[in-house]
Structures are given as C-alpha cells and as structure tokens.
Length: 84
Image 1 (tube, helix red, strand yellow):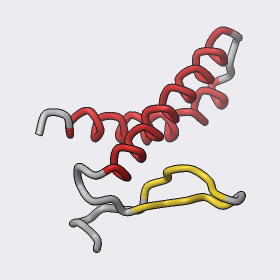
Image 2 (spheres, one colour):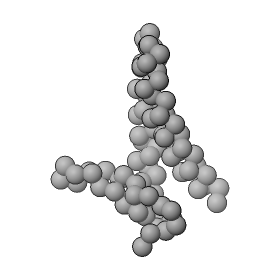
Image 3 (cartoon, one colour):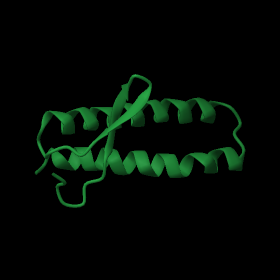
Image 4 (cartoon, rainbow, N blue to C red):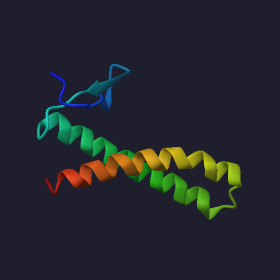
C-alpha cells in the first residue's frame, strides 16, 4: 500500500542488493529509513568537512551541492515529522 506521494526509501543492503521500502507513517520501517537518512547526512557532512580542510577547487565544491541539498531535504523531513 503506497501512502500518498511516498517514494521508496533506502534502508540498507541484503545479500549485496540494495533494499528500499515504502513505509507506513509511524512504523518501524519508517524509523529505520529515517535513521539511514540521518546516518548518510552525517557521513556526507564528515566528507565535506575533510574536503574543506584542504584547498578544494570550485569544481570539487560544486560536486557536493546536489548531494548536500538532497541530504538536507531528507533530514528536514525527518525533523519536521517530530513536530507533527
């Protein structure tokens, strides 16, 4: 059952294959997907911090913009859900 406009969300790997779910709101799978989104954003943040410690080129910085935007969008959705 698809809830609204939900898209499949990555929750990990099993037997070398990516696992995606469309989770019911408030369920365990949604919590797992939320945790993966937060972990991914945290990891990306660490990578960007490491790149910034060097002398990155404009192209290197530009490569991170779409990734950072996506990670921020996902984390904001998770955070906003806490206020519903």
